[in-house]
Image (tube, rainbow, N blue to C red; front, side, top):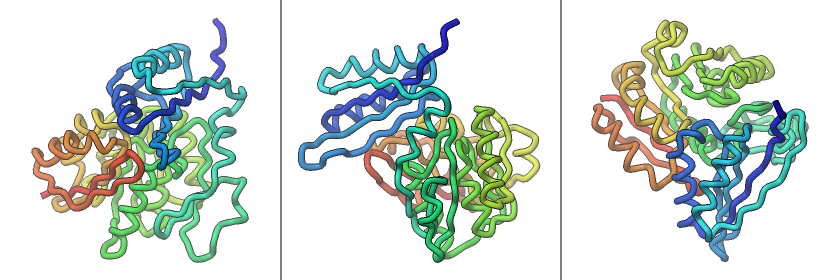
Length: 289
């Protein structure tokens, strides 16, 4: 069997076309776990950019097939270095400030201010360094909620690198639990928790029915930074995991998917507290009745 050489696929085009292509990626079952981002590259020229990182031949071929359906996009493909390719791709990214939180990698460890909650997050092969608009949206929403309340029990569904659960643990949460369907992400999350002297813990789980998730329910707050369709399918399990009046921070959805996701939670007795738009992405804060 031939080893797959990881690729970075970049697609540039008008916002309307780039968002439509991103929705097509989200809707494709083959691409359910692919890592990608979408952001504005040139406001004056209306150029938006999709960066995608397939990890298998099937994902690579399907991504290129989906993007080929949008001829207005200029698509380029670059072969990445072997080894820890995603970490290498992210190593040049600058640190991120989101409210009280300062997210940095080892290459920026000397830049951490003394006045912020500093989180060293190493990506490895997991998603969620803090640079993506969805992660930043979650951190900003959480930062603002902390101004008026504390959360003793927090669950992070689809934790990736663990940054959200670790942020909760570092700001007073006694029980911070994260889950992910990818065992590599769980390993990286636990390593990041140790790096940050955090008591957050992470388990390999698909959904919210794992024993180590149920044992700490009900939660005061749930983070769910995944994709639109899984957010909708998890609306009832998330409701069941929350205490009355508990909050959920939802992200991983495009602005064009906001109505679809919001409607699912409203139908299960949630109310909208806040929405945050960052680049093409949306973060929703909702409260269980």
